[in-house]
Amino acid sequence: MATRKSRGERPASSQRAARPKVASSGRGRGASTAAPARRPPGPAAPASQTSGSGGDAADAKAGPPLTARGVGMVLGGLLLGVGAGIAAERVLVGRDRKRPDTEAGERFGSLRGEPATVSSRDGTQLHVEELGSGPCLVFSHGFSLTQDAWHYQRRDLPAEFRCVFFDQRGHGRSGRPADHDFSLDALAGDLAAVLDWTGEERVVLVAHSMGGMAALKLAELEPERMGGQVAALALVDSTYADALKGMSAAVTARGALTAQRAAIRFAFKFFGQDPVRAAQLRRRGSDLGYLGTRLFGFGSKPSPGQVAFIDRMLAGTDIEVWAKVFPSLIDLDLSHVLERLDLPVLVAVGDADRLTPPASARHMAEAIPGARLLILEDAGHLAFLEEHEVLDAELTILAREALAPSRRRRGPSRLRGRVRRVPGP
Image (cartoon, rainbow, N blue to C red; front, side, top):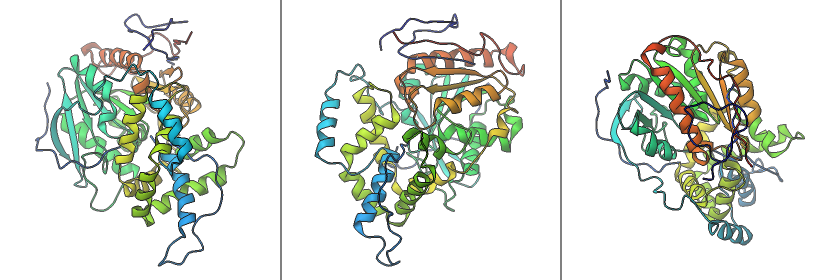
């Protein structure tokens, strides 16, 4: 990535800044077993314009007509980076894939760590991998992704840290809950199980999107962990409230919120009622899926290789998992948790994030005592991929400070001020 000059304050130990705009407001372990059989893996992307109502006229046996189902799938497809493609999209995709790609040589999805299986509190089997040694960082990925999405963090950070990654329930190689519980409480329970499994007294938790929501839920359920075992927290492209609000705002700033929410809810209801047809439509829509992934996941000039990598991951996530997980991310409000966080917190967001927009990140950074805000320029919901060099430098600083012996239980870091900026040219 091209190196950019910094305007304003930068930490002395920070490394290169690539394209972003930034603001910053003994090892034990549980029993390890063989990883479960691989399941297909997989941020989601919102619906743009809607037409038609979709399937309420159909009888229970036949279900909605194909046209209505198609409309529902397109709505959900735009939301999740998948949909029904046509020739025009294929032309655009073909051109986009041929753009110069500085990341073309990356072996996305091929970096494997030492595997283990962790049983969550309800018995759900979670696939965990760790790489490196040293102070411990735990990574929690977002909706419809897998731990492989942390490609650059898996590649670079194990040189200094013990890095623990896990697949969320129903994602990647992790199992599904026997009781079909994909609630935020269950996701928080999974995170707690992984933290316990590390055997570490102090860790830095790095959480993206849905993973960040689960981290805040865990802070609500078990506040003693935050500032205790969790020595510092990085919330990357995440939010504290209803995910649909940010998604709807990304589509239009003028309203139609009620209609958009209804359309999105209908799309997910369709996923659950007819997953086979939904999967068929998704396969037919691979080109539009690529464009949707690029639009809602990245900034203006993303690496084609990174987009294709995430698009494959999204397409590999089971439709039924989408339908069951996403409802847990709406109609929630964890704003009351923010002011209670008593530990160093880094809030990072891409300034082009259309799913969990910078306004949400700014609110979190203002509400959390001593938090720093990192705004990455021309990066989207997958800023940890697009601007990995800058983010990894900030995570390294956060971990060194929080996990140093002299930092134990000293409360939020207020070093270097709350705001830093690394602008583009």
